Length: 584
Image (cartoon, rainbow, N blue to C red):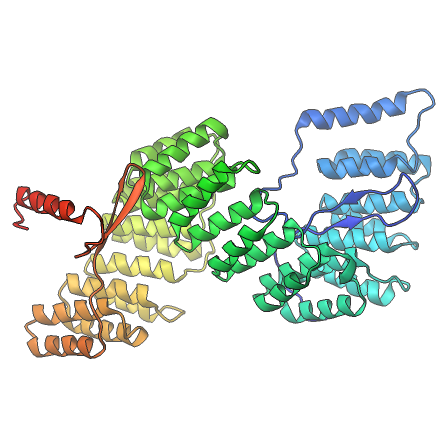
């Protein structure tokens, strides 16, 4: 059936198929229901207490005893509550009353343990019975799929096919198995499963299974089969549309995603959030804000926390401080400041140049995680407050949080901005020795930048030579810039030529190289560089700046006169230049 590897978990459904009245139980979560949403199953303690009191009351009522018709519902409640203790108590009563041998109760117990992630107990119950039906197998297979154990789920499916006593998988089985395949990203296995359900006509009666197959192909980076399945669906659900929209966004096909989004008959918050996040990820922030305005005028949905996080990220990317402040006010009125929202606000204020407001949000947050601390550390580092950033890093360690690779990017950047070479060396060494993290290109880039700014060019080049991977444009570019700053013509020329091998059409490299030649009075080589640029029709990338006025972000490019008020803008620029003594 293909190779198995560990992965993440989408949802998978479970359905009781036996016909006895009063004993069916349904837990149907579609594979794409978690897209862009938080599915925390934590139930408030008062509800747990009420359930316990209700169960105790049933036991105490004169002549009233739970039976095989009652217990499956009780186990279902325990599954929803994720209350293993209460479920174990009910199981004790089941054993006392002698109803454990009933197949409906037996399946309910397996489903309860699987839903709660207690797979050791679930497997003991499952393996301990000689009588199993399709629901028994489905409960455990889908439990593995839900809890991110795809290897075990597929292994159990193989056991079912070989030793299941002739039990044939149905659509519920295949939803779980396909979900396991999605987690593994095994396209070959996915095609085999698709072929099986098509040959056995399983897919015809199950839109949920079709959705799972579409999701599987997308997660296996195979868009065309997903499009064909979607196009052939006679009854598309909202999940079908959302799954396909997410697929288009994954492949950066924003226009196709938007067309499908506009065709979608009934939209809940998930596709709205998916589209907004897609625009933000593809640096099309204006479309993201425009779609948010459409959402506000829609009577169908209201923005949620995920919407706010995406929009704050858009503000961070383009420096839209006024919009970010409006979103902060909106969050204050409508939401509780949780970790996700707080972290997004900390990051937004820092990237929009207001580190004090970033620190204020950080200070008032009731709870912080590693990402929150990383956001403030990186924010302080980018504002040139290197020592303050390292102080926050030490505080993070004191409170017991473990830094990740992104945290160390902030730490090393802080060392670079503050010129703290010895500390940078120490933290770079701790990355692998103390925290068992494998340094990535970005970490090497930060170290090369730190050493380069300090004028330690030979050490920086030796570090590049000892890297376990090939240096990219960012790593070499950091050393190249340091060579220009410290007027090391010979190393700069060598690194510049390596950069041109990686990207011969990057005009910025030619410009810096020409400037270095001129500074070294190597006029002939400078002319040669300029000649190559002209032959390849390369022009210097024009400078660009952004400014926000009344919540609108304006972009200006050097010599650009496309703005309707460009004449007045350039007049103002001349006046400002004169006041600053620049003689513009």
